[in-house]
Figure: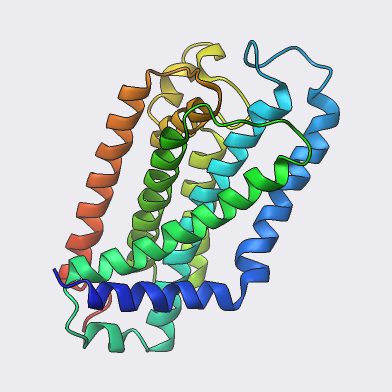
Length: 253
């Protein structure tokens, strides 16, 4: 695989979301920080969610990962959907890019947007709460996995959808529940059955739990299992996205 082609597509996608950074980066960072400010007043005097961890500090990694996931999905899905509806996707289809190279360009840019937003939230939250990374490599690994996974899922959603209403429905009924019900505001091991077992079927839970472990050194699920399941989910989603691109699903006549 040549790197020039996917890098060019990647650069185009990064420039696209950078051109409207107030909407694509600044707005989600401010929204998440508002969560931190509001919840800080309620959680600071409550019982500890995670023993030995400040409640507001516990909340920050979950919000950051949730924003990584949602913004990575939004970037790849909206870009591909706009290209489909505006008719300029033909320039990508006529280029000498293989399906894998096209996938790599879109997904890498989606992950970058997610990482920029997530990093902005962590840095901004540091103004309100003491937050120190226990293992930076684990933090980065799960953040990259999360951005790539939802970037790939965004491509699948945009290939499936034929109009923005369908894409919005996919995000509202699939992506938002998966990201919100992934242990962002609670510890999954504190849930009663059958909700704990149901929660463990959510791949986003392992991303949030592993990401949080990188900050505090504790997690509800063993980190090796979280990493393996996150990688497996990424491989399955990526394989499906590349297969759909190779088939030209709803993008070739």
